[in-house]
Image 1 (cartoon, rainbow, N blue to C red):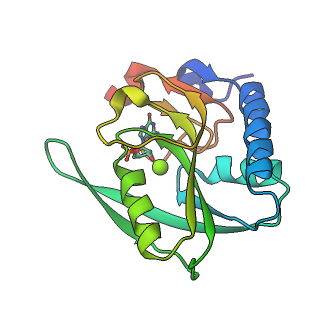
Image 2: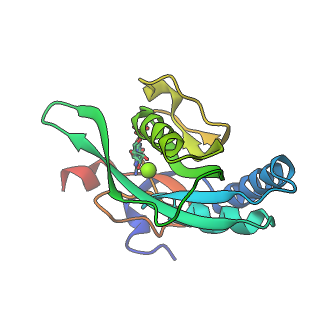
Length: 183
Ligand code: 5GP
Ligand code: MG
């Protein structure tokens, strides 16, 4: 039976099974890349929290977790491209191999900012892992080191990603019905 929430979903872009299989692969890839090291998985809140939980368990390395929250300064016409930190790192990352865990790479503003910020905080290396990549929307020259799925230029929800803070607990990636936005 579909929940009331799921009745708002127009179509599924990535199923639960596809997510699970791909995250297993990403975990194994990171395990190989970071063998013998102790990376710091850095979740970009809130959107990446579900992906983060699955990714760290798919990668059985000695590692630790950290969280950061950012938001873009918006203005009436468009996102200005400036990003601010709303919840900062709670530990010293000097000399650490940081794995940024992001939900979706869209314009690239967030990750360009974060990469620069983590460098100023002394990270030894920065690896970007994004669950979703929307390359058609990129305005900044940045690519992920690892991406789960390439998605078309549509607004997606589920598996941590929200619309107005909701739908994060849908277990797959989907697109909302147009009437949800106009409601
Ligand atoms: P950026 O444009 O800086 O690359 O991405 C900024 C943030 O916008 C992403 O981390 C994500 O939180 C949000 N975002 C971009 N595209 C989508 C989308 O299709 N769905 C949702 N829910 N959030 C998105
Ligand atoms: Mg995000």
